[in-house]
Structure formats: structure tokens, C-alpha cells
Image 1 (spheres, rainbow, N blue to C red):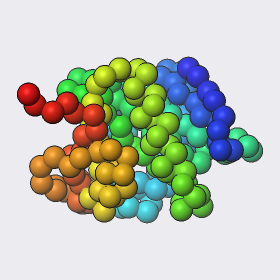
Image 2 (tube, one colour):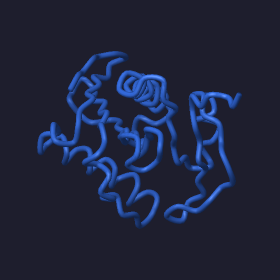
Image 3 (cartoon, rainbow, N blue to C red):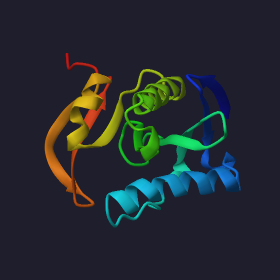
Image 4 (tube, helix red, strand yellow):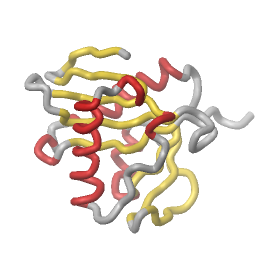
Length: 159
């Protein structure tokens, strides 16, 4: 577990078992608010949280404003992957989503040095993720009724 403060947000990176009850509740509440209420019916509890590292960003008042999970290699994809990327609706447009991803990518680089990172990105966010170094692979597909793309960052070019 580790935490650092930057840009008014305190980051915490920890395994599922290190989440306290209150932190877990906050994380699930924020994800439900966005993924279930905003985006439609969606089963958030997919069994992968226990095999993931969780990054949480809290403001000075302790309110969870952003979170993501980084899943270990082999649990979902061959590479480590980032998912469940979410910011609270009231902080959208502030750059917090980009800060969240940059922090998450830095944590993945420390956890799994030299490995590419895969995401299943909502297609409408392709440009956002491309600006962070991700490249689309393959065609768009539907996941929970929303168009998605496989995207990878850090893949070595074939020799």
C-alpha cells in the first residue's frame, strides 16, 4: 500500500484485501453511480477485484473522486490491464481522469516493469486513451451494450 498527494488529490494504491470496509463501500458506490445509474444495467462485481490493485483518489475532505483497478497479468489478459476507470460526475472536465490514468500507468510500470498495459476502452474515449499512449487493436465490439475497443500501451514492435 502507498499513498501520495498531488494536485489536491491523495492517491492510495492497494490490494483488494487492504481496502477497509469504508473504502470498499466508497469505491463500489462511485462505480455504481457511474457504471450502473449513468450507463445502464451492468454487473460490476465480476470477480476480478480480488486479483487487482486498486487506485483511489480522494480530495482534501476525504471524498473519493476517482478510482481504477489494475488487474494482474493472466487474470483477464496476458498483460496487466486497467479497468473500472471512473471519476465522480462533479469533477469531470477538471483533468482528474487524465491524472488518474497517469498515476495508474505509473503504478503499473512499478508493479510490472516493462510490460505493456491493455484496456477495454469505450470507443467514444479512443482519443483520450490515444493521448495517453494507447493504440487500438482490432475492431470495435459491444460490451454491456456500449461500443468498446481493445487498446494497448507499451507493446514492443515486432522484429
